[in-house]
Image (cartoon, rainbow, N blue to C red):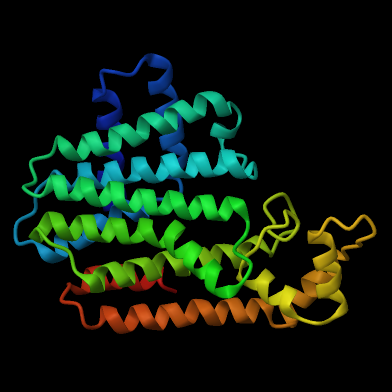
Length: 300
């Protein structure tokens, strides 16, 4: 792990060890789940840290605790999402009932951790955490309902589900540094989440397995594009989605159509639209180059 990831990881360890209101079983599961999270890094906590550093003149070491709190919330959402989708092999899917309690504990510990810091504007930070978490939950509800079947409604859904969480990380760092937030930071923060979600949508279709959105009859930008085409492949996919007993889904032909028929290119184009929007806003925000470089990496 790199330096900032190490700092956030250590803060997570401290928060887990110091929480006196949970028993041995919960604490042990928290540690195991946190270790799995460590492998993929703490991108949301780092969004918070870099925005705090970009807007402050004096570093308060409690920022690592806040970054860890955000990662608690994100991990709790990841756990709940995986339990709902049933398409993951993380350890928390092995005991869903117990894992749900761990996720609930993390949600409470997230706001508690921020409340216990020395920041002047910590209450505003907690308000941001709660507001954007609720927006993300609403987006997740729409995603599970699987009713966003056109470009506009799907983009609105992922803006809530994914964009709210990336914007949250940016805004909490900003508000802790200067006591207020800006629309520009919120806007490019949301765009980063949308970009990441579209990348996940594309990745989902590259492997024909349990996580494949098409096989699971889920909707995403490339699938919405595919379904809008008037050809034999799109008709067979429509029949498959409609549970037609005579529907035959040719995996090879469908994969070829996604790749060469424009669906993947369309999704990449939409990702780039949001990337250029985010770049344009970012160039007009007074943050340091280190923060800008990190944000640009997330926009690729």
